[in-house]
Length: 619
Image (cartoon, rainbow, N blue to C red; front, side, top):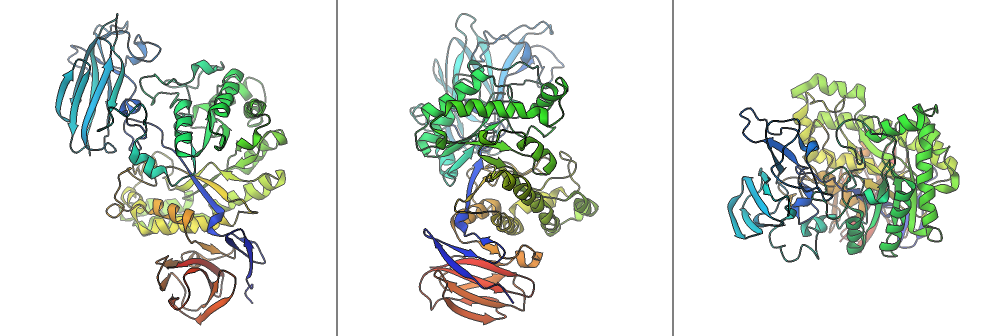
């Protein structure tokens, strides 16, 4: 016999319980997002001053007939503390040619159309190259140009001449209509509108956490960095290795009433960590909550911070890995705890763990002082099982979107089991709740960074309904981990970004101005719906893929709901929000609730293999 439903009330949410596990309502998922890192080729553009997203300086050799695009001498330039050259052009020891100093925006797809304004200070001359129109110098320190269609555009800016006695500095490249407001409103309104759906944002990529402060190859020396070496507001670009200044993070959180998540640089000294904690403590509005984490994924060998922590925490001390890295996490959270003494309710101290390797996760968390942290934080990604992905490689160009979705769906149980194990074998044993620092789809080729033979299908799936279904199925699985009254915090990765079969299509939006009626955004749609509306939840952990695909369409509806993906043999029971059975029917493919009062109802589908509960809204 199927388990009977018992209905309980909790605040304004109706929470359903089954014999095996609590069945959370859609209010039990609290989704935030990771913000995209700044890049001249990025399509997530938070700031109206585009100089903040310009590429770091590169050089060209003047008069060299065989000169490449970048002569490669930027690291030999003489620069001011704000990053601007002390003069231009410059001579360098390694070249017989004078060096021009330039920056670029290689992709302008995220720029709004209109007239742009360039302002600067100092004595010298700027020059431009690119796909703009009507470049005009309207005053001694003001240039305008038109960008009627920034799609597929490019802009290069050169400091052609800069006087050593009064060098050019404080260049601003301002979006249309922002010349007189960029100082009081530095954020791009369209970006604010899009990010408004999230209550919490993670600043990991804003802060250039992966390889923070490192230029070029390698992982740096053992020295620690003090607070005065952090990213500064007046630095010419924020795409550099120290990222966006903390001042802008605080300004954004306070202006938009959002909570934030910061990652402390891996080489931060005690001075840095303590003053960073004080800065957020003293400048955030009291209502704002701040999550804090040491660096990011210091078990992930593709990142310089992992190499650094292993070298100086393990190899040079003779300690085992990963135990030798724990001291960096511990002292960071201890310093933060000291500075938030008496105000710990304003912050959450995070220990990030390796989802894919329970033993490593345990050897980190179990060696932390239990009272020094608040939550265990894994990822909630689903992706391709490596063996199953070989089937896609075998299909090559003949692979379809359905093939890609099938491999992702077949891999889900394995992905979920790893996460569930982190909960039961680590978080539960320490009596710590879970929060998820990153997650969503991780549908990337093996090995990471290759161009897969099934490239076209992998790109196409990110605009297909099958991705929407995958996300809903995945969220339904993740819901089963929630316990108690607090929703699970899931930090989506990531917000806005191009599709790439080679390196991953991480953005739930491709561009900020994406018209989803023309270019579908199924990941974005699924995230919004699971944050704010009804959801499918499965009552039995042992279900088939067929049961996982049951969807109610449309939802909300004014009467008729189609049950997409339902089997031919079923029993459907309709309960109202107080648990009263309102309808029951056999072997149906749709339900008609038009004779019932408007409100929330629960559709319980009993089939031979499983019981599925769907929350619907009758308008």
